[in-house]
Image (cartoon, rainbow, N blue to C red):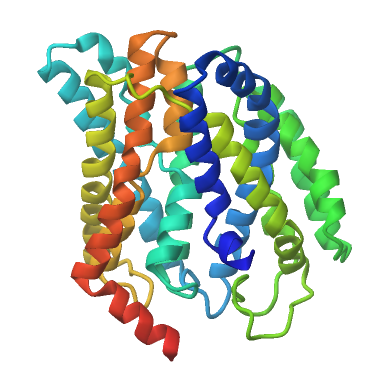
Length: 376
């Protein structure tokens, strides 16, 4: 069971089942996906994003890969470049192919799927490798910026900044008050500040799956970085680590249903949007991320200690897995029909970035360096 959980194989299983179901009984799968979408995507995934935020917060502690602000700035800048270049490639490709009507989907390849990219990164790098928090910070920033793009350019309804602020301020005040008064239990943060933050995002017109992202940083952490998957040290009792241990298994189950509810796409749904989305993700992400990292370092910022440019390239390739937010953007960009189905298939085929990342890591020697650090 530990082998399955540590490698997020439940997520893979859910994705495979969804593909099989959608291509053998499309009507029943569509009914299931529609019924499960809200509960899985808007409620359940809150916990996954919360755990991802935990990794980022702890990476900024002494001993963490992002303890230096100069190092944390690099993945944030890389996230921006990893959105701009794929969007530009998609837009120019749509016009070059003579399909300017498809240019509306320019934001689809801006996405990075945190769940799958994190899975691949953990397969390539050991738990303590600085590339993992680098990727997590990049992916969360990418999706946060992507949701802003969604609100500005693809509004599905009325966006209410005032309502968002009116509810988010109390959510942050609750979290701050809990920390200020020394509350160490997890539940007041999750069930107190969390739902208010969720309502702020949901009623404000933004994606509520990020509800715990602004709340988790208020949870008390240890004095130094502690990896959730490190079983060689005693269990930590700080709020942040208790939160991670409590939700580790439930989140894996949620990821199974997430894959099952979102990955079902007919194999016949292939067209120009497919190649535009997949190409922009697989090529644009690594190029943009690597180039911005090089420029940022030359400008005086710093890569995390122990992370080479080859590692940055592997991270960039891994970030080319669009899936979650890419599917969400596709639905917002195109109405139901062939263009939407083809764009979704492009988001799904971006999984090709996973074996490319593994191959790139082996060629660059990242795997050998990883093994050497793990033995140390």
